[in-house]
Figure 1: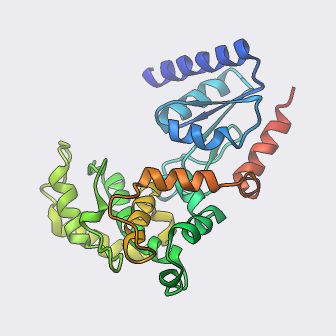
Figure 2: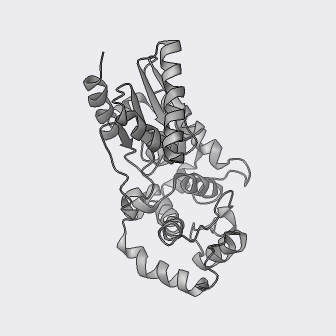
Length: 279
């Protein structure tokens, strides 16, 4: 009932915005960061409304579908939904990002190449055949711990965790044992896997890592954080505190082109949806 009421509430907010300001479509997204990303990609007759979480977007779309509302679309991060097989998939009125999140969309675009060519060191970059592969190799190990936490309801607390404490800035290798110890220490959840113990989590990590494609495990914020670390030694010579993950996101966003977005499958799905629902 609470989810239904939330969906009703957010739908009514979207309907008021559409009617009062004469927007053609309302696109629901998870966060203010998503709003910033999509605002410069959609036309002026589309209003981007952040709802603080994918659950709110989903429930609003479910409610909108129940009353056959045709002006509203939801976009949520793919994250680990497909790996968890939790039933959250693309539907006509709900799109999942092609990569795990918008940071990963930026990471795989030409914006990342331009960013490295400007901020990085040419000599250092030439030592790597594929800078993305190096970053993915590190980020995917962190991502697997995130995934296992969701899958097993560990509720491990990653917010504001500083990866520089577990990632070697010279090689970008990660100490998985140290990562798990630190994350467990900062987790206060009642479902924290104290009884299971560190060894079991590490064992689950070793048993599971090769089962998944590394890029499917990556969290975009982790990737941006690792880029900051890589710029200090591996890819460049910047100072330790010169860039934050938010700075990297902003730079990549500024370099991201509408042409890049047009080439994404999710954009083609959006175009199909908008044509079907045109007035």
